[in-house]
Length: 143
Image (cartoon, rainbow, N blue to C red; front, side):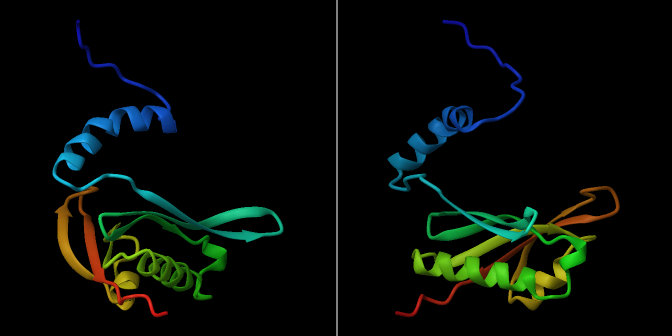
């Protein structure tokens, strides 16, 4: 059998699952089953979805992939509300922490105000800026 490297345009769910399967197998052998649960919170108005939060919950942590609030809706506490709701869902699901990454030109101050602490930096990404990684311990869900 010949194995080759192939570039694929458009990553759908089935292709993503096929690519991550070896990762999941290796993690399962170490007793860390990789079965992320997706969390999506949408901001909606009469025109439909416009912004929101996308996260994955796995291995007792929530990874916030995207938190986006349109400029016209900023300053109303929507970003804070989205993140607090996601943290509550994650805590209720048994997550003990959350992590997110942002850029020095975007919203590091927002995450600091929300109680997140820097745990890593990637300099010159993009050039002259940083990609900053934040984490926060989550309080256990109350009954």
